Image (cartoon, rainbow over all chains, first blue to last red; front, side):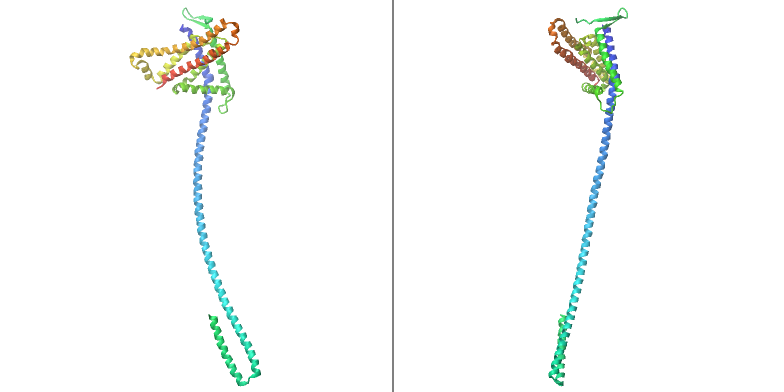
Amino acid sequence: MFLDMLPNLLNFIVTAAFLTYLLYKPVRRILKARADRVEGEMKDAATSKATAEELKTQYEQKVRDIEVERNAILDEARKQAGEKRDQILESAKSEAQDVKDRASRDIATELEQTKGAVHQAIIDISTDMAAKLISATIDKNAHDKLFSEALAELEATHAFSKETAAV
Amino acid sequence: MFDINVFASFRINDTIEFLITETTRNTWIVMGLLLILAIIVRVKSNKWDPMKKPTGLQNVIEMCVDAWEKFFRGNSNDTVLYLAPWFFSLFVFLIISNIMGITGLRPPTADWGMTFPLAVSTFFLIQYAGVRHRPKGYLKGIFLEPVFVFAPLNVIGELARPISLSFRLFGNVLGGMILLSLLYGIAPIFTQIVLPVPLHMYFDLAAGALQAVIFTVLSLTFVGIAAES
């Protein structure tokens, strides 16, 4: 009885052998090749990601360094600009003071010269007027006396003008 | 009606005689279908590029093999993954054999002479996996656990597995075949127009697929348990 079953078992074993070697294993090889490829690509992707993250970290560090450097340069530039500004202001003040002093001296000189000129003009006019008057009315003695008095007054006036200019 | 036809016999001597039965013929038909499929896949697989997107037959076959490996891992364990092709063949063979009744042919699995050898092969694989992967533990489990006096019961339990497996499959397929044979042989002719369709759907397709799954899953589970450390 059991011997009759043997061909059935052999039939199935043959079927299983064909299916295994003609169908299952070739397809399994293809699936494994694909799985290996996907795994390799996943590893490559992971490596690329790690590299990219490392580069990103490096770039971020560089950006931070650049920021620090920029701030340092800006601070230095501000400091230098402040010093330059102070120098320019100091120079300008000094120059303005010089100009002011020079102008004051010029004004005083001009004033002195103007006063001298006016004084001389007054003397000349007075002299002319006095000469005309005297030539018409006075004798030789009176003339000398008046001349001396006028000369004394002029000297006194000249001394007063000098004191005013000095003030 | 339910006898297995014998087409030819080959007598070796007075005690040994090989018969070419209906089961044998139908098994050869199933073998032929599977062989044609396997050859087509083998020939086409030479042109299949694993680096390209699979289409058509390649897609279907890859999906089946991949799904089968997941199914195998789910019902057994990875230590016996090398047995996946055997059980894949068993499952495909049983599916096609069981649903063969829809064509009017007698399913090979409606013969205990077919289901019992398959169950015996599972029995030997169980013993092989157990002895190979945990030789001391497996034999100790049979002969010394829980105590040695239970050894005969354990042995009977082991021997009952192929009988249980084979009769479950054989009985279900034979039952469906008998019911449909009665319908075609006894029932009035007008009942043979539409009524057999749902019966074929149930007894051949649904029950056939279900019994193939049950036989395979039980086999996988037994082998997985035997190999589990």
